[in-house]
Length: 273
Image (tube, rainbow, N blue to C red; front, top):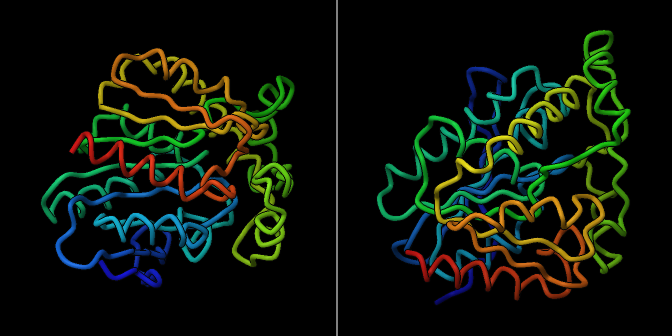
């Protein structure tokens, strides 16, 4: 199968926030399945070029998009007033992928993993399989969680640093260097976003038991941004297979072993198609 050299990205008019940046990695020939990918906090879907190419080379059509307020999409940078806006975005692409026919996988990393999980727990059109990478089921210190609703009322659009450091992402220094050199990466989020995120995290932890879809959870064993222990409750569910990659950090896809991690995901998907 000929390798896919790059994705195709295009801005699409969006009724709620002006423009949505949509990105596709198309396989050669008919896809064996469609996969909708949700990116994480501060980043954008263009950072998944290597992941999308590898999956497309394996026969999957990968569709991703920049969340509202992120990357090439419209909206105030990393601000959200209603968390359901994220789920609405996911739903539009899940519905599109379902209309193409064949199996459908929903995948998310970090914040994207929390968004994907929240979507799965909502009464919305469902995929066939799910993959959650370091799902953000915890975040912030106790004082930050307590103060966030207050700050969100006083100054909802004021911003605060996310605290991400290059060494948090990968053992490969080039990953962190590229992250901070990327003009579409944002290192701050609003207090309004923080308050909504903490509220959603609380909901997810309370409702984890409702997840019934076959799900793969992957996590780096040395993840300090989303501690590995955060995904342990998911691993206790009968329908969930959880794999911890010892020694890897938050962005397992961008570690030196990243291609092996993606290959493991593809193998798991193949086994469940």
